[in-house]
Length: 396
Length: 62
Ligand SMILES: Cc1cc2nc3c(=O)[nH]c(=O)nc-3n(C[C@H](O)[C@H](O)[C@H](O)COP(=O)(O)OP(=O)(O)OC[C@H]3O[C@@H](n4cnc5c(N)ncnc54)[C@H](O)[C@@H]3O)c2cc1C
Ligand code: SF4
Ligand code: SF4
Image (tube, rainbow over all chains, first blue to last red; front, side):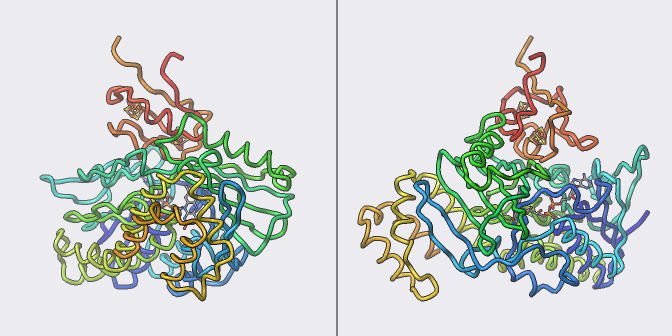
């Protein structure tokens, strides 16, 4: 089997990369170890409406619900409301992530890419240290897939980068460990995604409620792995649900465990190889949202592969065009949000309560940054010291 | 004896991949949709055990 590019993983990053590579003329194969694209779902299923700008999805079947915004609850229950545009990459639509992933894969296939399920990459194919493709297992059969470019779109546990000698291992303080129930029979606010903060609620993370419409909602938790104990994510989530008047009436139709990086983005290019999406740690370190970044990076990666095929050049220098373009597109934001995450981790619950109390009546769409800081500090002057590093980070 | 080794209880693992991404020894691999520790490489650092959201990893022999 010989291709221009072999893409490991059929998540959003892999399918979008494959689509744009195939559209620009490359012969592409996606391999996926699962037996069904997008299943099981490992996601909170929230995404910004900016996803529409990329025009990578047909129809509307993948949308479960429309969101107006987000409500953030501080440890003492003070609520801050944000309009969707302010609330980041996870607020806009709530998805059916399985249909979403399958639609993205369909887009790749329509563009000419091939997809092989039940096929797990087990190593890189190398000749004299040069990457020549991947070795994979398809049921009991070992197969060699030759390709000029290997794309590691293999998600948070990414092995492709490690096989190429890249240091993609995460520090426990850069990984959120998640658990989530999809509950039915719950009557929750339909237009808002809710986020709950607090050291006792979710150390180093948050609890979310994403309504899917009707009486269904995703209720999940992310905690920092460095603050985790065996099973803590699940037991804290159970505690949250059982003490919530509405959620405790719910019955789960799905339970999942997940993990998502909250690190700075990692190196993503070698000769004949690039990493996209969670594999390259292209995830917002504040929210743990990575769908938008996967799509944006996948488009750039696919187009870069198209050009590489045209010029018959697949070395690091050629593929670095991809890394440079994603850096320009959104790494600045990820790096800034990483700093914010590190600062916020040091905040006591008391500080979060003060912050929420200062922000609860602010009209975010009308206010300038200066006005915001003034609103914060005039109510709780001691916040100024705590926020100084944040304000500095925001200027970077 | 040496250091204890981590082991995954296969029935409990939900294949989230978290342990794999933080193992400093790259000793864990997903095999047939379950995480699996390669004992040869495990140094018993306990990171994976603490990380698992569903408590599916423990010390071997316990
Ligand atoms: C609980 C949870 C909630 C989340 N909620 C949100 C949210 O609300 N909004 C948001 O934007 N982001 C969210 N995220 C993050 C989001 O899910 C990821 O950023 C996104 O899935 C990244 O896409 P990807 O294509 O890089 O990786 P993935 O979607 O993880 O896809 C990787 C694919 O590669 C396959 N694969 C892996 N190894 C191999 C191999 N060796 N051979 C073959 N195939 C392989 C896997 O089976 C998988 O299909 C959440 C994450 C978690 C864990
Ligand atoms: S104990 Fe440490 S070295 Fe052993 S598998 Fe777990 S994380 Fe890896
Ligand atoms: S962290 Fe636990 S649930 Fe997740 S893959 Fe590892 S053993 Fe399985």
